[in-house]
Length: 141
Image (cartoon, rainbow, N blue to C red; front, side, top):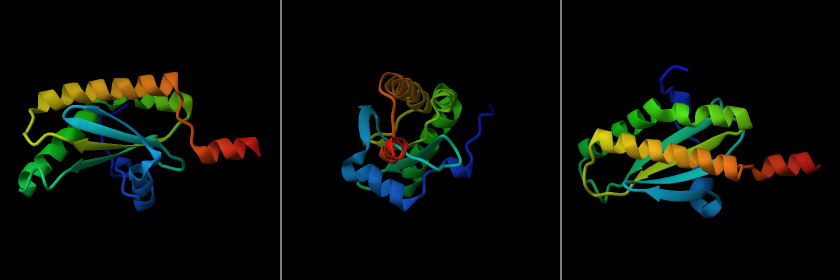
């Protein structure tokens, strides 16, 4: 599996983003990141991501963009911890990474936290499989 991050792996559907932040999604924090995830269907990839950095915490776009690049790179390098499990379980998930700290973090720190986050997501999926309500309703009919 190549270590690439295609444009289709980025979450940009407003409907899914709205659902994620309306309270339907699950979340946890692994400082300096907060992770919000939601099971979805009909995506080209098993996992799509969104990276958010608050303008309130970092006024300058240069710093916000740097953090976004660091988070995307950490995900790109470590996504193999999550994707095979999603394929095995035949699940698709949308994940949002929200940067919480008001200080810049080193790339190695973000990379280590990303590993912890993806392990935790994998554990959550294996112990309590994410099932989309629409999928469950269609199976019951």
